Length: 203
Image (cartoon, helix red, strand yellow):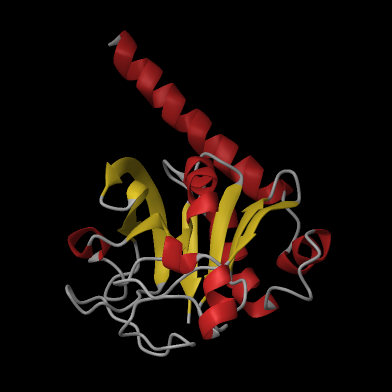
């Protein structure tokens, strides 16, 4: 009985905290200005991600935005700390080889398509695989990315995602659908966003 009461109180506290957190945050335009994003991030993409983040508590004041409408030769992956009003990471990120060359133009939720998925993801647990330290993702957008687990769509580091590749080929190398980051940065990003934060990927 005592355990049940404690669990119920914990749930009420979580809901209350989420509501307080959402109501104390400014609107999207204000936050956009405070983060100084006008020359780097499209406002409409930021607004969509931020509005969802405000109403869906992840346990951390952190979310990630990926803008695949930008070419892979530009930074298009950002991690924001909303509580500190700070951009924690701004990075290059690869897209799937069958999504396009310099630009990701085709997206898929199909196993073995080797295309990038868009939509809302939740960062899950970490593991060590063929690409080293990696982060599993759960796709939350039905029909767009909810096969992420089956497709093994994860965040990992890759040598082909290093910006040095751009100077040689004009673009990053491509993955089999994973948002691959430069190897020198991937562990820091993964440890920051793992275990429940949201990732918003737009085309």
